[in-house]
Amino acid sequence: MSDVKLTQVEANRLLEMVKRSLITAINLPDRGETKEFDVIGDTKKDIFSINIYRAKINPFKCNIGARIKKNGILLLELHLNPSNVHLNPDGKKIIGSHWHIYTEKYDRSFAFPAEDIKSESFKENTMSFLIKFNVVDKPAIIEQTSCFNNY
Image (cartoon, rainbow, N blue to C red; front, side):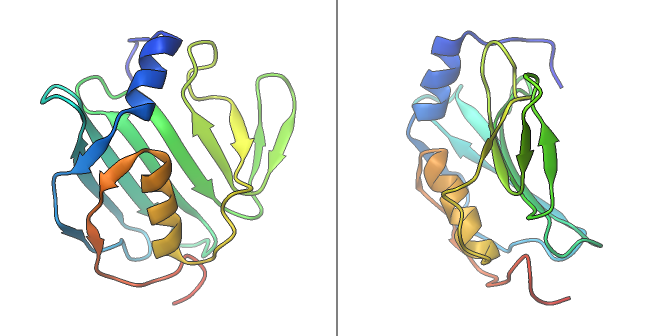
């Protein structure tokens, strides 16, 4: 993690920026694997890495994150796990799947319930993440798997 901080205005600009994938297709990771690919924003300097992780032991756990490539700041994460418990800085517990969205005050330590994520499909949840991160030119997802199947 970088010691660099963003202002809220800059974080919002980067989150809302239209992005395009630098690859045309991706195989979603198998159990215990991570896949990563880059997306580009409005300018050549605005490059972000999308990281997709699928747990090996817990069949209900998948994490998807987006970070600024040049400094490693995580802007957006989706933690998929129905039994997950996250304790926010204000003491409130978030139970189940949740989003982490970068804020100037809390970095990405504050979580919000992922009430908009209702599917068990790994592919659909990955697409939901890309939509939330404003990736308009998405890669094709080759492997149709589920966080909850194939175990």
